[in-house]
Structures are given as structure tokens and as C-alpha cells.
Length: 337
Image 1 (cartoon, one colour):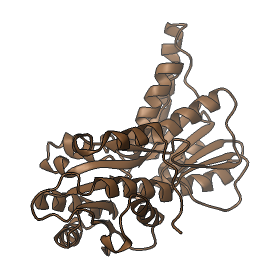
Image 2 (cartoon, helix red, strand yellow):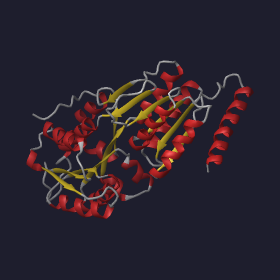
Image 3 (spheres, one colour):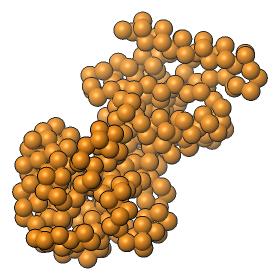
Image 4 (tube, rainbow, N blue to C red):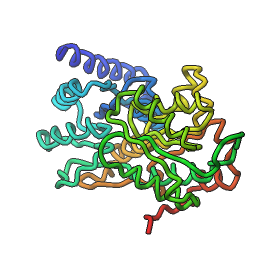
């Protein structure tokens, strides 16, 4: 497997070198490699990164390798380590949080190379060859709560309770949930009208479905999925109960639309990190010798750190003023009192 990886890397380099000789307008391959969690078509980290690479390549004319790390944490360390050992590569963009932690280890082993680590919330001393880009999950949750709070009751049907919303969460503390509570309060939702259920695993859609149904039966109009893979059950429950849901981290609406699933009609949209813009910016900074290594930048609502990917259902029921607020970034998340 190691030999195959090296051959693949050398093949990319050779092909790009030939292309550069064939036309003076094609710059040589940059010494950058992206290693992103996920697979092509996941409507999540890998696809977001691919969009950023595509935008960079169109504007700069430089081809950049993009490697899918997949979903198996056991494979991440080997792939990142073998890429870091390749002498041809000098800059690595690694994400999201789990792979980024492994990238931090390699950055300490290879101080002469640079690393951009996406989604890492490590507060330890940052090596001088590392740029950490984290995404403010509290603010992302705030935006979801603000949207859910204003949309609850916008599409009322018989038997629905207008201003009650909720969230399905996984085990452990969640900054996104705390932000969601505050965003809902800013939209006028009373604390007692925000319902929360926790599932014991982030990979159990059946448990997610059952817990979400209970929340809908208690009158929740809109639920936010903060339970990883278990949130898939929430979205199925939303479709079954004829209610609405909001995704987090992954463009769930696009994923279900691609599957031609009726679940897509139950999704209002998803709040996702702006990985595409983060990747494009890091590549441009690197090419111009302006990468701010040795720093930790937190991306939030004001600096375009995450994106609201609304669905057709959202644009059908959301007031125009709310759409304008989101699009023009005129919202200012504040902690609850």
C-alpha cells in the first residue's frame, strides 16, 4: 500500500510536469497536498475542500492534489505520515479535526514543512510551521437557533404548536447546542419551548429516529441534528412526521436531494463550515508567501467561517428580511445573559 501511494504521488507529479512543458500557460504543480476526511460525493468536508481547490485552480492555473482520507480513523495516520515524508511536498492542508490532530504530530516531526490544520481546537503551543483554522461552533449553533426560532410556525398545519423547537444531540458537551439555545432566545423562543434529547451514540440512526419522533410528538416544529450519523434518523423522522429539520456540518439537504429522497422536503438547510473558502484562501496565501504560520485563526459568522445552505423549503417559507440578514451577514451573535 505504501509503494502504491508513492507511485500515485509520483505519477501526479510526472503528469503535471509534462503538462507544464506542453504549454507555457500551465504553471508547474505546487508543492501542496490536501488530505481531507471523507470521500467524493459526501457533501461534507471532502466535497467542500474540492470546491475550494476548484476555485483556486480556475483563478491561479495551478493544479493541486486532493486526497480523500475516507472515514476510517485507522487509515488517517498512515496516509498523513506517508504524504509528509514525500520530499516533493512542502505544504499540507489537513482536515477536519481528527486528521488535523494527526497533522499536528507530523508538523512537529517535520519542522521544515508547513501545515494548515482545519477544524482543530487545540489550545496548546502552536509550532511556527503551523496555521490552525478552527470554526466557531457556538456561532454556527446560534445561527441555526435564530433561523429555527423565526421559522417555527411559518408553515403551520392543523395540530402543530407554533413556537416550539428542539435538538437531537450526541453524548458529551456541545458548544453548538449552547449557541443554538441563545440563537433561539434571540428569535423569541422561550427556554421552556426548546426541547432536547440525547442519544448514546453518534452512529445509530435508529435511536436518532426514535428520539426525534418523541420530540416531534411533544410539539417540536423544527429540530437541529447535532448527533453525527444518528442525525440521519432525525431527518427520516422529520419526513415521517411532516415536520422540519436543520442539519449541521454536512450539507444534508444536498445529500438527500442527490438520493432523490422525500426526506429532502423536510430539510430547511444546513449550517456548514466554509471549508471551501478556507482552502482557497490558504492556497492563495501560500503561493504569495503570505501564509500566517504560527497562528490560530477562529472563523465565525462575521468573517465568513460558516455557511447557511438553505433548501427550497427554506426559501419558500422564510421571510425576505431573514434571508437578507443571512445573506448580508448582518447578524451579531451574542451570549445569553
